[in-house]
Length: 208
Image 1 (tube, one colour):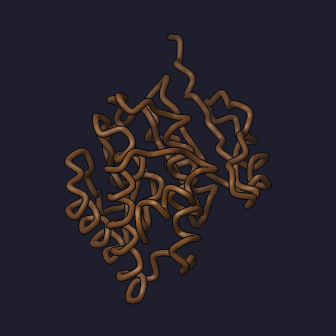
Image 2: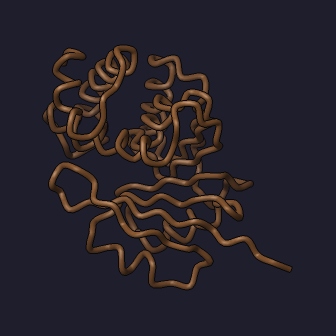
Image 3: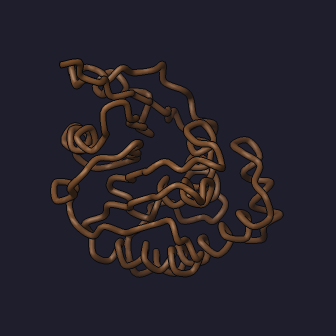
């Protein structure tokens, strides 16, 4: 798929420069090649991949970050790299850790990072429970066992940091039901007509 075609498909979500469009083209080729052997995504058409994966991820990137942002970011259950890798592409000064325990998916992420020459991305091939430390921004999208994964994600957010969930509109109530120490913003509809939203919470700072 050419950068011109990609730009047209992304227009409802974001406008990107030529370098990013070329990187997306390379990424798509790798994703389609690997997806024939490893189940990275159920979305098979290149056009749908652009909008469902790249469009949604870059939409979130533009709402959460500036291109000059230097934040530390964790993408939990990164899978095929969304939204973590697009966040790293959008904000090259940010440091992004992709947590993915599945070996084959982690191998794919390493290949994408190498092909796109992303020096600000690290792949952590273990479970979230094994990661030590906290970060300024944690993202999570389309993970299994949502409630459990959200609790793990919340632990990785430092006080004053943010948790960004890309979820179905029907999951918002579940996501905000627990008294988990977060102040939740109003959910934002993600373009594309798939009833997905961006839900952002800021972790409260405890006052001793």
